Image (cartoon, rainbow, N blue to C red; front, side, top):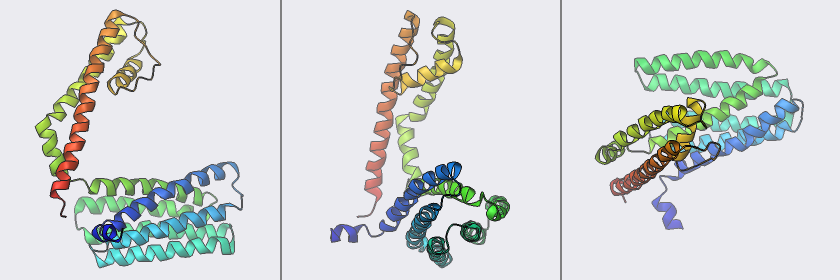
Length: 278
């Protein structure tokens, strides 16, 4: 076990970051549901404590994951971890009231604002600066809600959304696009998938005209999607011989595409394993 940890110690901050980013959702969803039904429930303090504690640990892992890129990022992530930990303690001590909600809301918005400023400082690119400038204006606009009764609803919603974006960003950052593009080129995957999409659209129009079970193009497209993906929901069924022939063709095409995608994934991870250092 120790040897395994020693061998993969560089990946521990990454795994921890993704794990605690994922754990944010079990706290944000019940919070939003409770606020809609009983906005004065004092039990929210414990939920907010748990949410901010998870965010603190997430930033701690993120500090060690991103700290190698820049000391500024390392210090800022450690600061975020400390601030969120302090906010988690504030709520149960002082209770769920307007003052504590304002403090922890401003802490959250401040973290987002500093992130965008750091991005501008590190990357001197016009497009990046423009995007971050727009983001800063939006953050300042939403931060005005910290004095309203809906401040925590907005904060929790943004926390959930930003956590999802973070998970996707970390996941895709581990993908070596060059290897994936080469595999797609060799397997002609783009042409096959494009052909599948065009076939689905063409067959959808054909089903609307020649099969009485389909009254709209959207229903036909939904049916073609279900057949191609081999899901088969069963909410639509062709009644004519023409519709059944189309279904057979789409089903065979779907099996080929699923097999193709599977082979791309297997080959991609095989190539990734070859290029990863031992």
